[in-house]
Length: 315
Image (cartoon, rainbow, N blue to C red; front, side):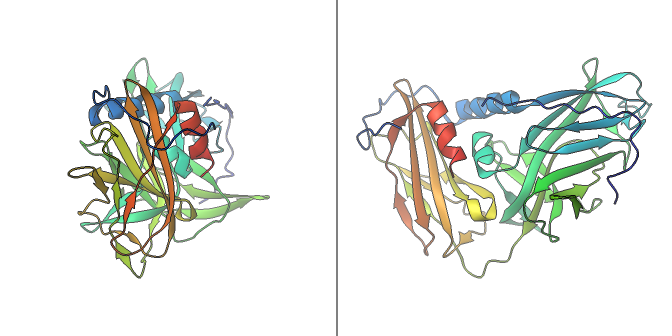
């Protein structure tokens, strides 16, 4: 697959996402929380909206756009189609969301859990994105092979595959293999990219299933003065570029979903939690090394969303 094809008109645009004091452990949080799990879904939807970059591409001539994190979208001439399959002319509005790091995955709640023939497993991610195109408010599709995507990477892994993302009713995301597209590693001078040509516009992720030798489930326990219903918990693996949502169960417990195969024993991870109440926001960042059946007690401190975002970027 070649990405250095001649493009008649190149449109390069970059949209910029604008995206600690020590407090006593476990501050008292009021028992009347405003957000719940559904309110968190709106919080993540707002974050995704803020992270969405918009570009204009000429449908007839095609062009290239580049996201602020380095993702390249190369549209061939006459790529865009209406829903009925008729060609589109004029300017097209292309929108892009880049999810390349574990901080992005948590802030936007885009986890890396894939369906491997009916078994849910953790995925190593090479970067995810959501791509849409519209004209006059109408959603558009693309011709097969009409779009080439380059995702920047520091280490090109030839085992990466392409996945599509499905958002579940609880707000979590599950990824399914796309067998019709192949991911290859390409080098452009000093830069490496994961390169592929998707057949459609949707949530996509360069991932791979890795066979870890020993897996387990992890439980996180939040203090009784932290409202269970207004708390979200993740376990993140920076070395794998992977994030798994921890499911609320009973009492004050959150666990890796039992429908999920488990997380790798012996690996370093960080459990991240965010609690939102009428008194403000509280967060927890707990570094761990995974052991069999471990239960981790979380400690929360006051935070702001800006401070929480900065801590995510430091993972």
